[in-house]
Length: 291
Image 1 (cartoon, one colour):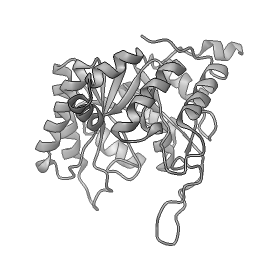
Image 2: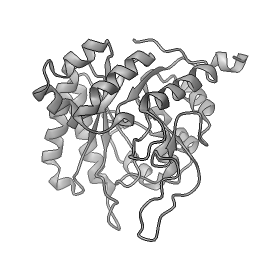
Image 3: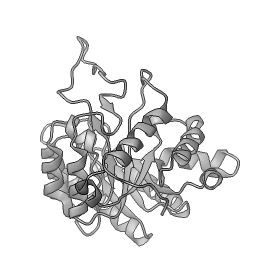
Image 4: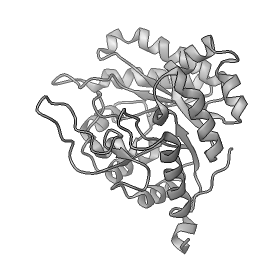
């Protein structure tokens, strides 16, 4: 390890569950592997913890206690496009928030609707709803942070700017996904520089690089088996620069390693998570302890 790598700030690093799949049956194996690999925490979806808590013996608390792995954050996706039609989404997120709090989570990760915005979309209404959720989350002792994602209302740098410039910055914050932002066509370091003071959560994802390619029917061509992503350190993102930036802003919240699963994933989930961890340890000098 070089002197430069020794100077990189130690981060709290967990892993999300999506590399193992997106259903209740994959969750225990994900928690088991993430714990045994030595990651410090776990993240999953609100729509996973809620039915798991209701239907599985011991609930989600029993699961994380079984493997000694804290729940660091809960991902809360929303469906609304029209802010006037957001009440059901807000109440759903707050229901997940109450459960997240009882499970020990610190952060709600907020995603906009999984569809592209209509022409002329006004982001001020979306920002107002996210700000309301953020205020209500703070009242519960949680942080809420906005997560850009390809194929959603918040994908490009202009869309990130449109919503982030309209939020109440004391109420809701920023949760960049490094790979999603690059795949969406933006410069990750420029986005981080613009909104660094609002970063409260990070999805650490690497991307294979290049523009998204599509087949004759408009479907994305997956060149990696992970929706274009790859284990951390094996793509085009400058992870050292990202960690240096996080150190410069004094970031002390969760960094969650993430890699999207598909039916064509080229290796078992545990192996992919181990590859990311090995890179972070051996190249960036990170250590992994539960906090």
